[in-house]
Image (cartoon, rainbow, N blue to C red; front, side):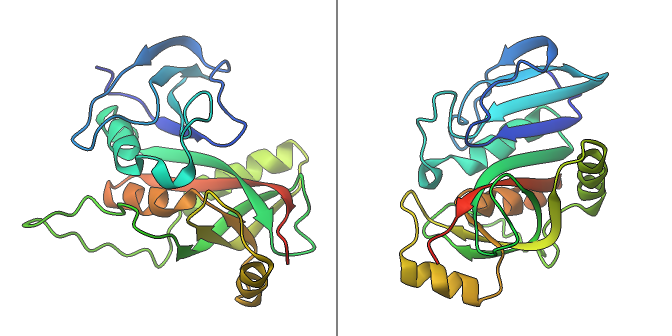
Length: 214
């Protein structure tokens, strides 16, 4: 099994293709938590070994509340991944965050329900800090790349994570907006906190697809 992969990428909604990787091969990993969302493609991009997995499956068959987040993170860990870049599609809660803009969340609000959010089990309890959930080093790298590509990217934003797969009611959307949060999506939690438990750096990059219904 590959053990020297540097970076893991979770493909989000609309990102299912690993065609950017060279010298690629597919890896199937079984985990103590079941199967990951899909096979993992391992290849090379600009001399770095990278693992790619579409979190919803290649044909987007897995809704956000049914993703096996623990298996996905565990599989990357088995490959030696130390840094995870996690693209996702989100709705905007702020007028200035327009469709087509990119967002780097630095905080989250968790409104998910009944998701397996820890590797803890009886006899092995893990308490982690998520005061600052994301890796500043990775975020700075993403910001520099965005600047070089001349794309609009917003930083220091808060992501509301809801259970899905349904979208918010107008009342819910107005409530989320009133908290001061900036974007809303369905996959950030527990993915980011499991990465923290597994001692992997993690950064989310969100693409605004529309305004939420506020």
